[in-house]
Image 1: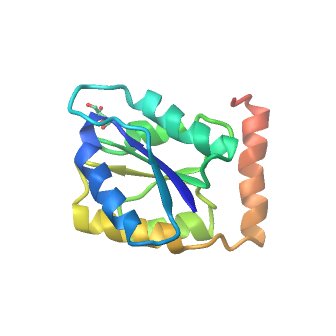
Image 2: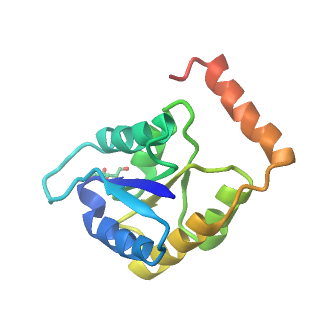
Amino acid sequence: MKITIGSDHGAVQLKEEVKLVLKEFGDIEVKDVGTFGTDSVDYPDIAEKVCADVTSGAADRGIVLCGTGIGISIAANKIKGIRCALCNDVYSAKMSRHHNDANVLAMGGRVMGFGPAGEIVRAWVTTEFDGGRHERRVGKIAALEEKFGKE
Ligand code: RB5
C-alpha cells in the first residue's frame, strides 16, 4: 500500500511518529510531502498535496495532520473523491474504514498522544471497507459532490 503523509507545523513531530509506526508494516510505502520544520505553513496547502496523490492514484491512501486535525480534515474533504476521517480513537478509525471507506486519515498533533495515535494508525491501515449497504451510502456522498459542484 502506498501512503502519502503531510502535516502543517502543528504536527511535525506526530508525523515522524506516524512514519515510524508505518515502518512496522513491510508492505507500506510512505511519501512525505512535508512540512519539515517549525515555520508556519497553511494546512490547506498540505491537504492539497496529500489528496492530489490519492485522487490521482499515486497513493492508495493519505494521512493529514495539523494542530487539531480539524482544519486539515475540512480542507481535505473539499476535494472531490476524498473521504477524510478525523479520528481521535481506535473505534472511529476502524469504523471510518468499515463503513465510510475513508481514504484519508486526519489527526491532531496538539491533541493526540503518540501512543494512541500509533494505535489509530495501525487500526486504520489494517481495516477493510465492508461494502454492501455502505457502498450505497458512500455512493450518495459522491452524488452530493456532483450535486453541489464540489471539485
Ligand atoms: C495552526 O496554528 C493551526 O490552526 C492548525 O494546525 C490546525 O489546528 C487547524 O485546524
